[in-house]
Image 1: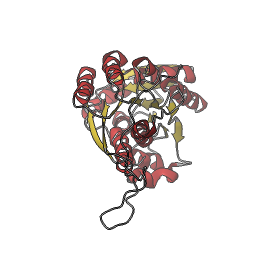
Image 2: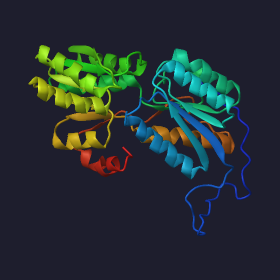
Image 3: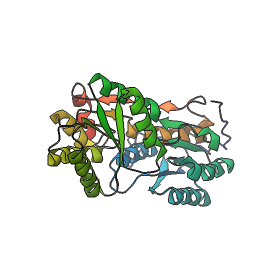
Length: 320
């Protein structure tokens, strides 16, 4: 990939040059005293999807440290998400971080932001195309690679017929995960589409499929809430399939510790949100770009019974 140059005007910094700010009691607040800027983060997160709580928490922590006003918004519908990006441009924000589950719909407006001189970075979805739309950096995981590694792990555990559950139809990242899974596993991988915004309906769809086809020996969810519903669906259907998933939350981490879910592929969403906001502060601070023209990988890694205790406390605090 070629490096995309980011041309920005440096923010007017205070005379102390970024020294820690003093809090109201005269102590250090743990941040900097550079000029306060406004950053918009626009994701495709659906209401109730706990994954995005972790992304947002990371973004908020970075914003607090960097003296940034963070404006977070989301919409799972690509046209609406594109409109949110346009609104951020119109409001004159100082930086934009955006996900691109549908690059064709969201990329052009993201490019408008970059061409308007607004530092713009990508995160989570859109790694293959972020540079095409003028973004200076990207934070996330390569979904086909993550899927392939998950498939290889399933193969090593004897998987013969895996159900890969897509909860956002039209989301390229999720399609890529399942494609990578099929390549890595090398045996039957079947796609099942559910409505991730209606987990009760998603569980019913899973229940019916598992009751109808007892040859399914693994269910691979692409988010923690669906994985937890898959556990219940397997019990209801009297099936014997095991569950693995992409992504975690506090409840999912507990499920791994209890043996209800075998393992999870972790792309560290807190880190994605944190690094995206921090990169925008650096762009204003000294014109820096992050990644040297390459994506910054936050995953994949595996969380299983062998290391779940390491992250359990962080998960309870909404950090993993």
